[in-house]
Image 1 (cartoon, helix red, strand yellow):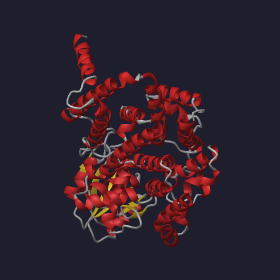
Image 2 (cartoon, one colour):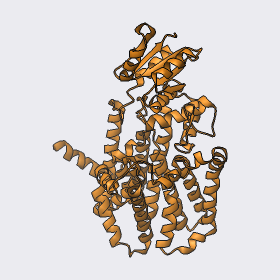
Image 3 (cartoon, rainbow, N blue to C red):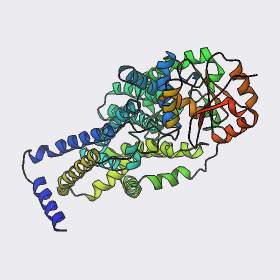
Image 4 (cartoon, one colour):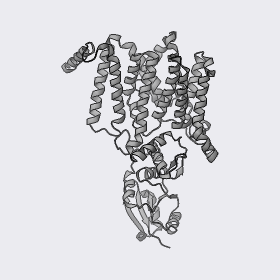
Length: 492
């Protein structure tokens, strides 16, 4: 206890004295330091952890597929055309893979960049609306939310979309506060980014801002020449990729996740989602939800303040539209809440600012920076486990690299093709050649193929093959409790 009291006294003395830097400039310097710490946190542990199966692996494989197919315009998962999402993230991956190497580190690099930019524009937005102290507190809230921070190091599209949305909202606020309509063009760019990262699911700002103009009585801004131009700008940029895709692939593209598929199905066909689940998960995952709710209460009590009213309204609309959209969607993942955490974080910062007296703010700022530096040192020195466990099939992909020649054929017997196709594409630089569902078809494929054929199956399905293929024709090269890599000797 004595140590902490001494430390507190030292911080108090430091925050009230002109040591090294004058007090007048200390707030900005500490904010800059805190941003720098966040920058390092976003990048420091992009180590080569094995990628988790499904989403992370999918997005990494799609970036690698660009280089393997040579097709930069139509996305692929291995050799299969995919419109899972538009191409911006995968383009960024492919460029990094081309310059450096195909690796876990470079697959995560674009999300780390957009993660830091999300922190930066969240600060700039909160500062523009409510002052520098709320801006710093927004950084503090978001950076201490592990749920938010960890998505700066996943090969996922939710943080890039959050960056695009935050950029769009910031552009509109900047245009309004600085009385400079040209910033609406930045809004249009943010819309285009949102689409290119995640399709229609990245276009929240297209609903938030027009509704904001209506609720705040700024109807004329809907017809502002720069605002209309920003919409045209976004449509033009989106159309550069989407229109040729539709003209080439027609209905298959239109009804995909990169087209209007999510709008028609309300998410994903065949899925259900209780309407209350997004709210329940928000309270479970965002530890700052109580300050956020109190910040919302404070905002309601201060709606009469003309200087703050529009800022509160845009945050309410931002938060509520996302929660409402997720509530009516047929599919929901907790990561879909990431874009809603920025306004929630700003509301929590408003609550903290209400309780931290102006004379105590520098003390708080010094303490926050000191703790952040300590955490950064611990993360840098100590081994940190990955956010999510890596794929359990990594040993298979490594065996393929050492056993299967490039001119051989790989066939999957039953199982889920997307699991092995994505992993082989990313870790072995080759997709599955084929999948068969019947043992007779597998034997026929082996007998009628001139190339060497390697087969992947799980142990249960391998037992089926053993029942109809003589033991002397089966050669197991490697196996685990999840998979078997084997050959069938050609015969009659």
